[in-house]
Image (tube, rainbow, N blue to C red):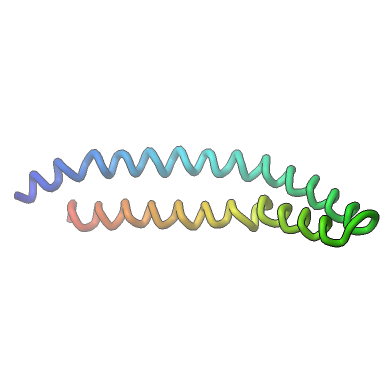
Length: 96
C-alpha cells in the first residue's frame, strides 16, 4: 500500500518541483523589469502630483508601489513559498 502511494505521489512532487523552479525564474526576471517600471511610474507620479492633480499623482504612486519589488512580487514570492512548503509536506509524509 505504501509503495502505491509513493508511485502516485512521485509525479505530483516532480510537477510541483518544476512549477517552483519555473516560477522562481519568472519571479526573478519580472522583478527586475517591474522594478524599473516602478521607478518610471513613481517619477511620473511625483511629477503629476506636483504639477497636475493630487488624485492622479496618488493613483500613480500606488500603482508604482504595487509593481515595485515590495508590492505584488512579494505576494507572489510568499505564495511560491507556500507551494514549496506543500511539496515538502508531501515528500515528508509519503517518503518518510
